[in-house]
Length: 385
Image (tube, rainbow, N blue to C red; front, side):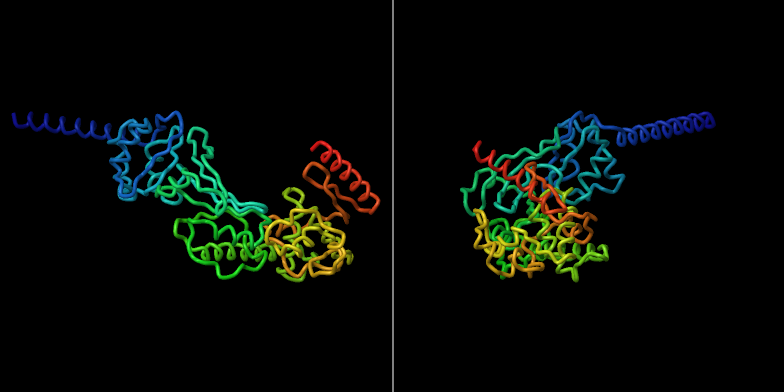
């Protein structure tokens, strides 16, 4: 009898083990298989939130089929205590395992509201935008000029939300004065900027910031980034470029930046100035003359006068047979690399071609023909305005 009982108990135990193993295997498959989401969603994890709270929200939004399995899987992966506060994008079909990784990985938020401060060459704007998870594209909800326009309600609401991300984006070709002037108008930043950094020393890029960040710290990040970019480009330069130092490269790069905004043209434009430097021909670039007038403080807002083109100044490249003494803006990486690795071309001239690009020429006759075409295009545009 006891033998029969023991045999039955052993059988039952084995069956329970098999059932438990099957249950674990099923749970693991549920945890790692493609999730039920048809469209991406945003999931907000509040500060001090728990995996139980997150699992309930995910169940309510149809992102997970079983919140208990989600929590057990997070526990088993030792990630339950690693939850990060913020707003995160959960893509369509994400498994529970992938979602756990998303909400515990850390780093910047990938969803929700973002405020972008755009520092451009001619203006500055603050844009409030919201990520639409269904399209993974941002939808603008408000924009204004800091320090000029009335602050919109959407921006004030964003300032009260701890999950909102902030980003400062600096355009290639903005001057140091423009950047400093814009940063001083941003109320999300704090502290003074003691002096305007040297022209060309700030790297145009997109920088994530947090409320209360010091303006000088952001300037230091921009400076360090530009130093790295310039050092790397100088290390990989064409040894035949007629530039004696990284500083000269930065000057030429700033001229290239102001002459064209088309990435594909930068090395061609660089080749024109390189050929002129090699042959001792004056650079004759309007942006340098303009910088000599404005010193980078705002936009000239009119055409150059003949008297300004004839006046001898350190930045008048129609008069001086060399590079200007300093950069005329803050060039981006592509323009710095173009200055140090220009295309090999015979071009000496270029002029706008009416499409946003330029027409290049080797001889003065070809150049004059291109100029005549451009003036005709200008006249037609003026007549239609």
